[in-house]
Length: 323
Image (tube, rainbow, N blue to C red; front, top):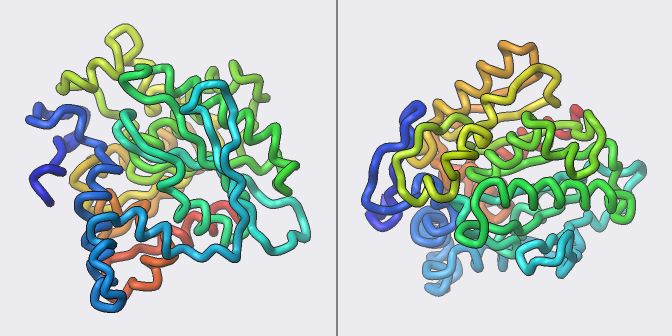
């Protein structure tokens, strides 16, 4: 791993001190500076475009197909500039209303842009889903629970507008990667968030968490301690709100993840099973933290003989189709 991207890893419940603040889930910066840079490098021999090395997310999004979906951008679920949302709709005519997936990206609760995740919107919509990707306020503009308030509002917007985009509001799924997986799973387990947003009980058909931190206290990073103030900190852990009756959950984990310890996934799955919840765990032996979301990208799937890509898109599709 590039030294500028090396994070402090979540080891069990403890995040060790590290020189770089709040970097145990630095998804976007590391994707830009390391993993997808290497993936883009695999295409340089074929394309001769050195620009891809310097701008891997831009390269990735430039390579996704444009004809299999329509993107509705510049939509908003709130008044703040960070409360925008994009919707991806398959171009093929549906025979029945489609499932809708709300995807939350990661970024250590400190950054991220929905436009960088067109590859996710395209990938899921190519499998017949309507996909909503919101931005949300991040630190330092807000601390916890500010981004949870935004996430709940985005889910309410998605459900209210599902039929407009040909989706079934009763087949509403949440998905997230890294910090976004923490957000998605907390919405599913702490039911007060969606209730305060005006959503009915059992509004979710399923939840998908990829490489997420679900059980990451105590904190030993000064920036994370400000993101999760002491008075609110215990309310941030999805694992602590499992009571039984959660929607079906798919947890995916890369066994080469050195940013978020895979133990988070194992502990979360064990807690869900202890309460008789329906949970599936998919373990990907070759995948890093970044490639848990990178494996959704159709341009990278096309390079799977050259780079480590897992069947994440297939597994997510099978999960949604089954529910």
